[in-house]
Length: 192
Image (cartoon, rainbow, N blue to C red; front, top):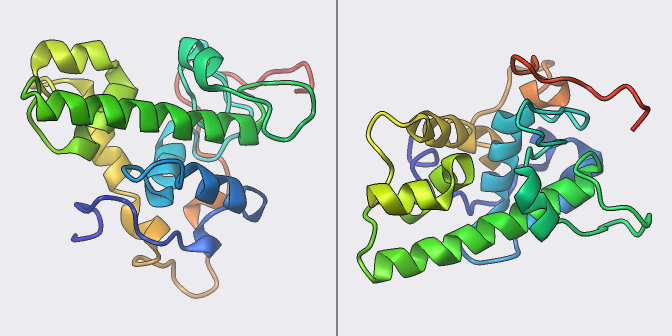
């Protein structure tokens, strides 16, 4: 319980993360002091179940499901392949980290000026889900908002990615295979 209600800056438990993405998740979780790698991994678990090819109904692409306008703002070619794509997991995860850090800094300012109330991480996660303007208008996370479920969903994986909750001997972590795709989502068929 303590880990799930914590700040998500615990050491990332490496066996819980696909090994080809471990360094990228750690790097994204070290971009700012407010967001840790456990937060990044837990968001990916909720957003895509580690499905690198997921395309959402809102146009978000890839493992982190960064909103398209925010991916355009925060996405960069992380692996020097001369392409920046939400379907490239390194590009997607690092864009997620930069966007989360940007939100966290804005939330800190809003908290300091008493324009919003709440836990800084919860507010940042909610802003990732429903947008910063929604959080500003409500002066926090709106009652009955889907953002409440999003925050709870992300936090529910903190223990897994901090290594506090381990699967039974001989069983894989749930992150090693993609979760079912959200309704209306699709996997691109053009070989990306």
